[in-house]
Image 1 (cartoon, rainbow, N blue to C red):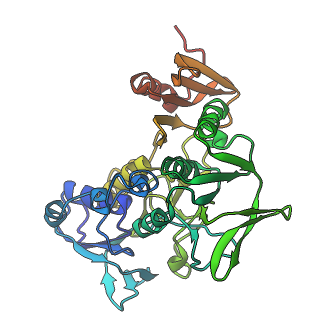
Image 2: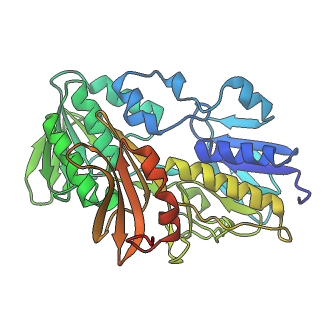
Image 3: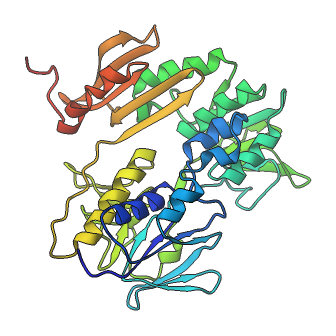
Length: 398
């Protein structure tokens, strides 16, 4: 282990917390500062669009660790303050409150920010994003029976929020850009199943592309589409993707390429490491730089970055070689996936059936297993993980 005495972790979400914990588990006993822009202690984001938005949970249930566990980490915890600048030469993080953190090494885990539509790039009543606790609580205030909610964006966040909102009695329109939303993430067959499920529950699915949020009297009234038509709503949720929270690094010399550009070991330069949603690293097998906005990735990449940081330049470092994993809860179903099910040219059931809405399947591209997806078949799906990791030929030998 190198003789580090001061380490800063910038970003107090799941990746930042797990990085701090990994450092302590590995024996680092120096000063450890965790900086978070939000005032809340580290919390879990996946429940925002489900349990918190639906009212089943209150914010305190989102906490990743209780006060005692945080205390045991012996952190200099700086919450509610943003990092404004990183001076790599001086090894100093400058904070928005005027504070300065001298550090021998820094882990960048600032995550992403929600993308907004023209017409609502600044806060606007009735126009919502869903990234933080306060975002979820603000949208929850709107969701009463009969309210017209327009969800813009065909990704997992939009799908989960639409399912939650219609369950609360809202009249939900889901604006998507493709005929089968989620196909790029979960594969065409699973996406078609979920699309049908949304329609069964009363979600109106409209295909089109939003150009801007419309407003009147300082409140959102819907969206205008690129074809000139308009969709009216009482509230709009902009679930149109995200952008890496890296603007504060613009003049730092840290390489930026759709996020913090890291090497295979999560290093972005001498003394600089990255993990979580904002980290872009070369994917094993392809070498293409990519980010993974997945909860499991935040945990695993943070642990890898911490271990490699402590190994030092002359120690044994391990490349980050994950098997991507995601899950999504929509209505009564939990969908789980490994690898990259989207874009497969073959969908092969291993267990169950689509009509039963309980199955495990491999997603094959050019004869190799590139992903696996399932509903209600967790054990069978876990059995396919190794084949996804190895990109095994399909049919499997033997």
